[in-house]
Length: 212
Image 1: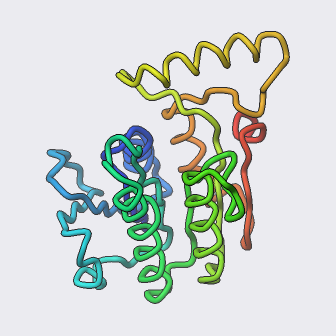
Image 2 (image 1 turned 135 degrees about the horizontal axis):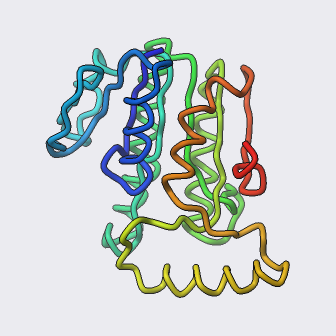
Image 3 (image 1 turned 90 degrees about the vertical axis):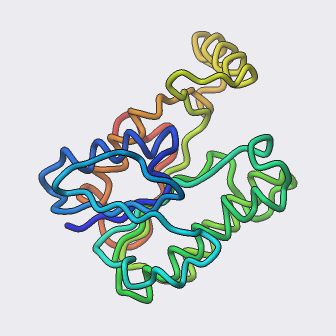
């Protein structure tokens, strides 16, 4: 199986790239990045691209499954408009081209509270992306909806505080819907998903990820 990956330098993507390279079920892995990663492997093809002109790289967006785990924070993006471009427009554009090129499967990293009807900008954005991709009619569409992700070496103070708070509440049986999940664990589940899940649309919620 030939894998395509966007978000390969992110906290989940870097672990997913390792999983895909090491998994014998994947014969090749193509990643699309803004800057060279310095990674080298016989199975790996790296495309350094301008994400504002994705159509120019259409011939390279071909394979069997597209893994979409590209995303950023509002603080890093600088504005909601910029975050929308990164979290919605780029993944949607890649998905559209992949479907045009007959890529059958798409695995999307979304969010636990994603909903196009949400009053929260981030949750609504993720929900609208889920819907937009669903309308592209992939043969296999897998949506992962994790809660808080534990990122290796994170310097986000709010994230650390939230993780500790959730650990406390989880310990007394509360808020398990939001149990923190290490990104390396999520990456392992993502890589296996196309093989374990059927054709059609599958939604993998946080409670199901651990036993997946």
